[in-house]
Length: 107
Image 1 (tube, rainbow, N blue to C red):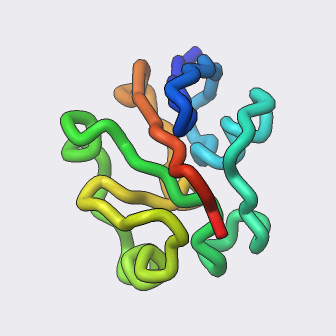
Image 2 (cartoon, rainbow, N blue to C red):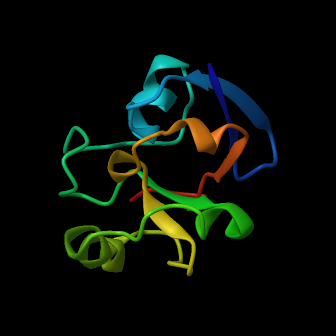
């Protein structure tokens, strides 16, 4: 199992287990993690699954697609260099221990 840590805006840490091939959004849903609205159902159409990846870990992930980059322009909380959409990050074995920071708001 792959461990993912979701850090809420208030600092609360929630540990989640994932399997290779899941999206971060599905990991959050499967583990009862609050904070993602995902109005479009995880189809990169709404930017309500915005999150921040730990900067030192973000460089290990694949670059966001043009579609994801475009949607990141519409996030409710400030966009940062390590902002991503949880629906677009596919979990892989090397992401064990990934820290995902939740924004204060999604809309």
